Image 1 (cartoon, helix red, strand yellow):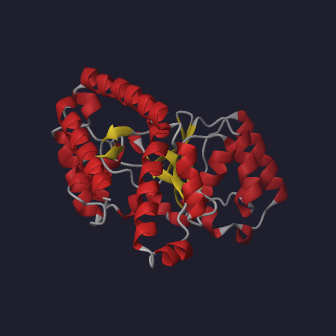
Image 2: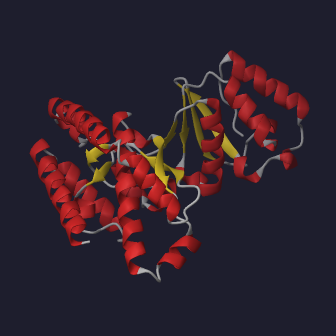
Image 3: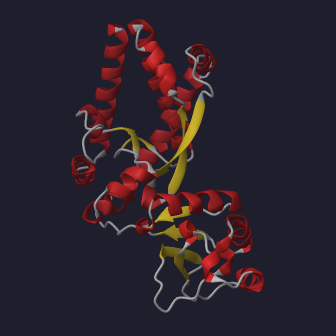
Length: 298
């Protein structure tokens, strides 16, 4: 653990930690990392043994979370090189401590909100108005959809996943939980399988409207990647993670969901370069048309 300057409460917590632990061998492997304190933010990077000082607080997840809760850090910035296991531990601790978490990514000068701030503000306002209206219209149907999902055997109905948002900020998305055993059972019945697919897609879209109201997503934008997917994006394309993700976009209309992340990221970067409000409106109308066509077909 590299030395770093901290606020008083963090220093006190770490001093107390040193009094309780003294052996580097006690360190939890997933928590082994290097820290830097800069402008009120805690920067977390991969552990570098040479010239480092082990931080005893990391010998215990509980002690680690206690130190983080007592810190005055305004946010935590995590290096992708830490890997899935370490990042998930940091996410859990930061969530309990009430600290926002960001993935460390390169900056991106060509973001639409930088090039066209007024048009981007209009997009944000429209996103929230449309999301609120859709939620209002769907609210009487949501309990029915949830009940039907329960009848399909999915219990619990919901779970959450961490996704990468604007400027690399991590946020949770509430999703329909899919039990693989239940899916296998329903495959024998084609109609049941189709109904479950439609219900799941509708509920997931409705739940993501909540993320739009919180400013974490947009109606149209690049695909929202999970933490695991974001770590698979090559370093030369990670600046694409600065963008505000969308519920739909070119990636969905061109059926790129199942393609590799290089293809999806390239498509997202092209979308960001060519972004306009009218282009978003066109993509949204095409997406709605496709959804209505599928619904009519089934």
